Structures are given as C-alpha cells and as structure tokens.
Amino acid sequence: MKLTFLGTSAGKPTRERNVTALALAFDQDSKWYLFDCGEATQHQILKSTLSLSKLDTIFITHLHGDHYYGLPGLLSSKKLDKALSPLRIYGPKGITEFLTCFMDISQEHLGYVLEIIEVKAEDTLVFDKFSLKVLALVHSVESFAYALKEHDITNKLDEKKLRALGLVPSPLYGELQRGNSITFKGKELDAASYMLAAVRGRNVIISGDNSEPDILGEALEGLDLLVHESTYTQSVYDKLPTKFLHTTAKDLGICAQKKAVKNLIATHISPRYAKEGTYNIGMICDEIQQYFHGKCFIANDFDVFYLGRDGVVKKL
Image (cartoon, rainbow, N blue to C red; front, side):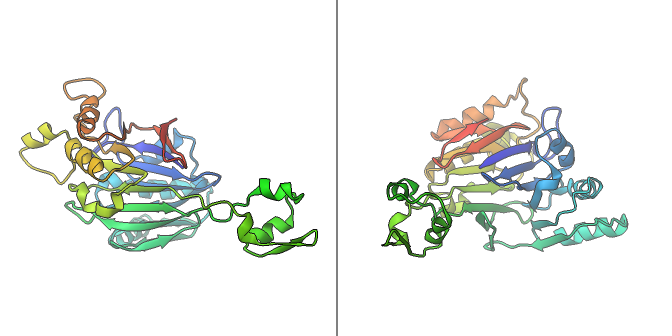
C-alpha cells in the first residue's frame, strides 16, 4: 500500500508545501485514490509519477478550501487529457452543490461520467480492494476521517503442498480457490485442506481536520497507520489569540500512544513551520515523540511511504 503526499500545508500554500492532498494506491492495482484536493493539486500530480487517467475515486474530508478548491481544475484537466474513464467523488453535504455550480456557470461539459456521493458519519462503503467507514471529527465544519480496511486474502492456495502431489498450476487450482473439491489421480482433494491461512488486510485511517484525535476511539486501537493533522506545537497553540479547532503535536502523540497505533504520519502543518527558522519542522516531530513511542513521520510534499503487510511503514 503506497501513500504519496501531494500537499501537506495547513490553510494556505508555502514555498515548501502545497495545501492538502494525498494519493493512495494498492499493491498490484493500476488505479489510485485521492484524499482531499486542495488548490493546485493537479500541478502536484504533474510533478509525481501519478496519472489522472488512472485516478478512480476522490474522497473529500470537509469543505474548507485548502481541502477541495483544486477540484474544478483537476476535473477540467482530466477531460483535456482525454482521460474519460468514470470518476466518483465522495464528500460531505454541499459537495454536490459546489461542483454543480462550477459546471453550470462555466458551462463545463466533462465528457465522462462523474458520480458525486454525499456521505455522513458512520456510512460504510465497499470497494474491490477495501471497505471504508466514515468517522465524525471535531472541527468548525462537518469533517470526516476515512477508515480503510483492506480485504483479507482468503483464497491463496498452498502451491507447495499441491506440487508435492504432482498437481501443477492448472484450471484445477481455480476450482480449489473457489472452495470446490476436486479429483486428482483418483483422489478427492478437499479445498479447505489446501488453502493457506488468511492474510490479514492492512488498516489505515486518513483524517481530515480534527481538534480531538481521541474521538476516533476504538478505530485507533492497534491501527496499522494513522494519517492525521498536527497543525501546531502545544506552546504555539497556547499563545494563539484565537483558538482554532486543530490538533497539537502533543495531543496527537498522547492519543496515538494510548491507542497503541503502530505507525503515525503527521501532516497539515501550520505555515509558520519551515525547514529552517525560528519555528522549524523538527519541533513538530520532537513534540510527538515525547509522547508517542511508535514509528512517526512528518510528511513533506512528494514524500512516498509504503505500508507493508507486516505492518511496517517505510519512507521510499
């Protein structure tokens, strides 16, 4: 499972970071999925190895501009690229009105099927590689996290055992995978006896803006990977004259540790934090790691991470 960060800034772009967008691709799958689509996401895609022609579905976490203002340009460019495969967009109430308005006013005729589905908290969606549950967050507008559970692999044959009997790959393998018994060399082979143990699917939560990571509750327990905002360090947040509903590095670290999250990637970083300067990005990482003892990364634009079936995250 590969995650490509196309934008990691909070609120507005900086010289180092664009606003929020994250691409997700599964092993041995040509298509990919986009989570949020801030302004200029299509520019970021051009600088990556991703292709609009392979984009299958977009999930919008909430209707703040830094998470969805990139949609009109991306949808139009898809047409101009003659990438006319159907596209689905899931998001909160209001996403249909926004996209319909853009298409009506600009007289945009996309030339491909665009399906817009408004979701609500606790909805469950099923796709060919995974299921997804919509989780409510705490923010100034309705905001969601998307909890993905990859399907378990339950039909993998014990090829070594079959070959020991003299049965090499053939249509009979397909019968066994479908759970049907077969006869080989006069002996009946029961399908269940030649299946490997199920391979557990990976589970990931990709969160929108959220001031209370604890609200994710049981969904966090033993989670393979949490992608969550970490907009401020605690000391900066405490000094803000106006408090915004975002998570601090301290609160994120405490929550992830308490719920035994295996891997954490922090994103949606306040523009005040840069690679160098009074507020540097290392401050976010250092504060999280005071409280969280699992594997932690701070995402930068164009960072690519791989979550293996062993539950280990590696930066590629």
